[in-house]
Length: 492
Image (cartoon, rainbow, N blue to C red):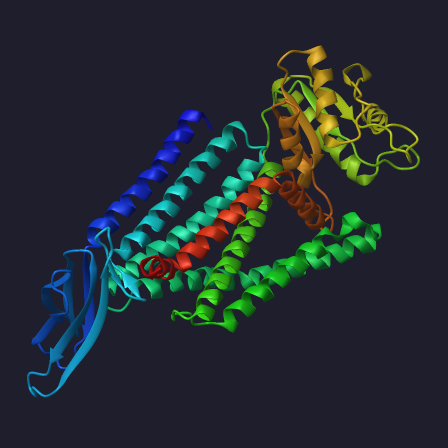
């Protein structure tokens, strides 16, 4: 994203904030009270203890409610009494007392309860989420075309889902405010926002349980087939985290299902509920996004115009022959090579890449070269890279070989399907714009490997994730307690 575009995006956010503040300042100078009218009476009065601060500017009927519209005149405090009379029996009446404060900005504040123009806070949040959704969607579509192999692609994809859900939630709440203005207030709506985020989580619980169960089963199958190793535990660890997070969210929701009071314990529980559910939903979106991007990369078929095909190495057998995982990568590269030759007549060169491990009799690159020759590939188009020990080194050293033979070469890498996306990120880090193809793997191996890639993505961009989670916590806390914050500011 260019500097100019970033400035436009920032300007957009500032525009929404400025619009929201101005709208609240303008609309907040009047305040409408809806009082239930059991008498179906048109007779009502208003008495203000200080008409230099607050006056009544109109009384009307709306269904079963009488609407009292108040107007702010000057800064100060006033107690207002609204009364509805039973026209059939003049002795019967309903009176409600309201303690108003008019802030220095001219905005009404109903002490300990509500403030004028709060609906525009909701509109501002809806616009903010919708704007964020659009930005992330545009960015994601752009990255798919020019820089798909990037953690920012995963991030944009996850934020599309997250902001999309948030946009729907706030637009739904706004609809409730427009349809039932007499039945809702800011405190109820802000708490309802937390409940809806929690509801999103509850809807996803069956999918989380199924997914976590599948991860555990596949992980146990992997351990059974390949033995117990640390690298074979990622699926079980993620399953435990998903189950633990689900239980925590459920506990928080059950512990305090109602938080519409101004008591300190209710405020505390509202914060905990909103923060826990928001962060957990965000992590769900991130996991789903990482899986989507990995699968998208695995199914993508590059153009048949490649100059070089890099084959990423992995552990070989004790006899110097490729094990099934590595053999799958070589066979996938051969499949693409023959298809390209058939479709375009273009002959690609191979760069088998991988050094010699301490427990290997030859380098992984030499092992792959021998296999390629056995499959009928001319040795003259095979350029082994025998020094690398990591995927990043695979990319760097292989790029150097490709550059020595042809400038601006079209490069393809072959690996296992779950590994394409992160390998593509490392190829970009090595300064190489390459496409990837992937070999299929056994069903019990893929989920654990997928989780390992996900953890690798999180670890590689941990600063961004911490910053986003901190922002979500901050916004969730502030939004869930806007009325309380204003009450504190007014009465400090």
